[in-house]
Image 1 (cartoon, rainbow, N blue to C red):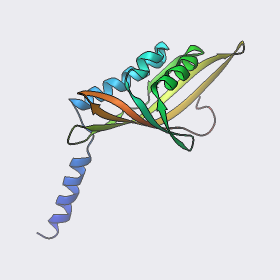
Image 2 (image 1 turned 90 degrees about the horizontal axis):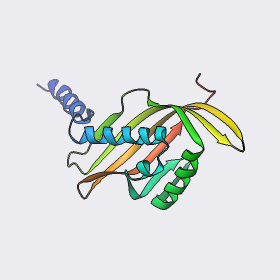
Image 3 (image 1 turned 180 degrees about the vertical axis):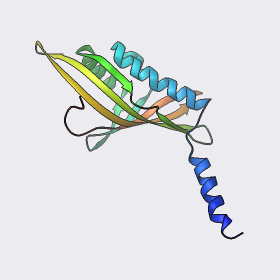
Amino acid sequence: MIRRVPLLLVIVAAAACRPAAGGDADIILGIHERILQAHRARDASAWTDLEADTVVVASRGRIFESPRAERLAIRQQYLGSTRFSVYRDLRPPIVQVARDGSQAWLFANVEVVAHRDTAGATDSTHTIWAWIELYERRGGRWLLVGNVSNERPGPDPR
C-alpha cells in the first residue's frame, strides 16, 4: 500500500494540472482568436476592447502597467503601418482556468509575417513569438489583465 501512495499522488497532481477544456476555456480560446483576428484586420479597438483598463506587461526585460488609452494609441500607429500576411497559432494554445473560475491563463506560440511601411519603404519580417495571456473574470466577463511575451531569438525562421 505504501508504494501505491506516491503513484496516486502523481496521478492526482497530473489531473489537477491538465489543461482545461470546454466552458470558460473555450471562452478564453475565443478571446485569443479575436486578438489574432484584430491583428490581421488591423483593428486596434477590437484588440483593446478585450482587455482591462490597465494591463500589466512583461516584455524586453521590463515590467510595466499599460493604461488603455496609451495601448490604443500605440496599437493604432503600429497596426496602421503594418500588414500581416501571417498571424497564426503554430500549435493549439494551452489554457488553464482556476478552480474558482476567477482567473485563467493561456500559453500561445505564434508565427508572424509582417510587412511594415515606414518612411516610404517596406520592411518584411518573419518572427516566432511565445507568450502568456493572463485573464480575470470581472463583472461576469473575461478580460485580459496581463501579458508576458518573448520573441524567438536568432535569424528569420524562413
